[in-house]
Image (cartoon, rainbow, N blue to C red; front, side, top):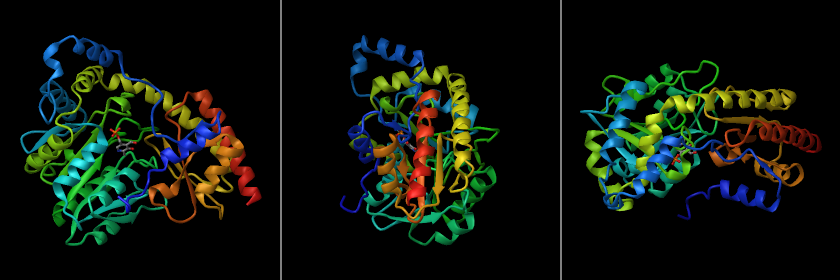
Length: 383
Ligand SMILES: Cc1ncc(COP(=O)(O)O)c(C=O)c1O
């Protein structure tokens, strides 16, 4: 554990607590909660005595069926017979399950930089080696660099689209290329689709698990946390090759026994209300995103904003010799706004900051962005 980085979110959280009134453009959560169907199911669940017992390790059958239907209709993924759906306690646990099933100590896992810090932490925790492949200037995949990073010890290539922390949406072509590379080189392709619905300006989502012949080597990870404002309920799911099912069940049985059943009930309600529930909320987020872009357009002389058509993040590059964490500290202390330093995501050079705009109402984001722009102007001018 001494080799595992400490997550920075609680550190920034503590800074915010010490400076009351700070607007947080830090944490990656949405401002809306679950649909009424989800909470109604949870309430009804409580009165039924057998519900309080352990249930199936891989999830209750009603939820697994609803997930299979959703995967077929929306993602083009046929979960059976070559694959299997396992309900997990969130997308993070799905990633841990996957790693435990496929990797031994000393094995290599290819991550794209910037990476999602919990992925990197999990790889180190398992005694594996994260092999970090930088994306391009617009945070897009570089399939040739990924190919060059694969060695006989590589067990998996990890991709996330839409991406945390960059907001980049990977093209179908690039994802097909990476998936095909994984098939040819006999490594798994772990693809995280936690932000699948969060797309703007005509960007399209693609699931590599829908590629014919990909079931044997593709592990697809999903989460209800963002789409349904469901983060506290801890429900995600994974689609994995059938040959990994026994291993994943061992892990999940040992760690969790089964995902909290009341949460699974609520998840059935959430999936029943479906993407129609999420769509207007994400359209509203699109307007907030535009507001963020408008504010950032004021500081293009020293702040580069790579294209980000998904999730609810911008990862901006500030032209400053200062370390990103010290910029974050000054932003909180002197300007009352918090963002996350790029170092958390494996960006070692320059001054990169992640702006998250999902957690706040439009008015608060506008005020926070005003503070951020004023703060960055002052900090960059003063050096
Ligand atoms: C890419 C990605 N995967 C997974 C998660 C974790 O989701 P969950 O709440 O389902 O564990 C997050 C949360 O920020 C994320 O950004």
